[in-house]
Length: 277
Ligand code: FE
Ligand code: FE
Ligand code: ZN
Image (cartoon, rainbow, N blue to C red; front, top):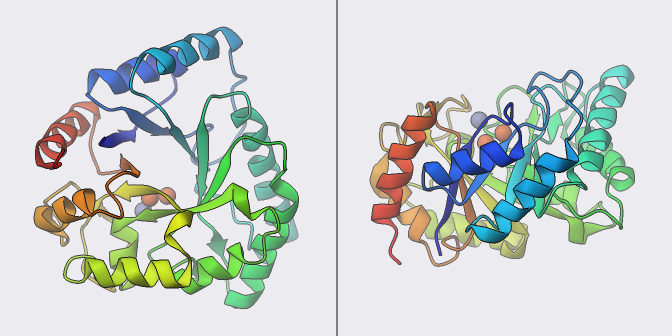
């Protein structure tokens, strides 16, 4: 089954976002549990959540993906910034415990000159106290484009974090197609090789979700500028191969393309037509 959705706003509550997803023929969605620039989060409404749970039971929506605020940096040089990131992360995980089947995607962080090793250590130290045995959510490290001092531009860096996390059955990876291409993994011409490399470095069992985006810039550009499906450097043929690849096709796909809701609807229609059932 093809699981595809887009990034939607939860401003109108979870039942409404679920209905909006279904209205554009999506069977999952991504959302910010709070403003992408941080700030405090609205309290969850238990009545809205139970209606949303009912909607999930009665529709094809099986899993949903939360995206952490962009501004958090568990690898910061500043203790204050790290603590702030930790508190947001911890609070988000607590809130996500109240929601049905979900995962929490975050940008691993930027080492801001301290070096990759130090950054990996700071991130994994935090994860070791943030990830609790009793939580339901799976935490996903996102593959990054390698802008500035971003950690997560190579599979080795992500594995460096994962191998230091003790409760590692609660951790996975979300592969962003724009980011990995920008990072220098040629998923346009060598998709099989990149997947094999992911498998040998991290293990495909860790791959839990795909951010499906075209890229405005080319291979190894480290720009992180998403483009609409088929209009970027990856192009439609490469994206069709990705959604149909035997090792990827059963994962949930999330569009983060520069679109409004009707633009997402068109892309979902296009991609559903190109997915080989
Ligand atoms: Fe992201
Ligand atoms: Fe992404
Ligand atoms: Zn991005």
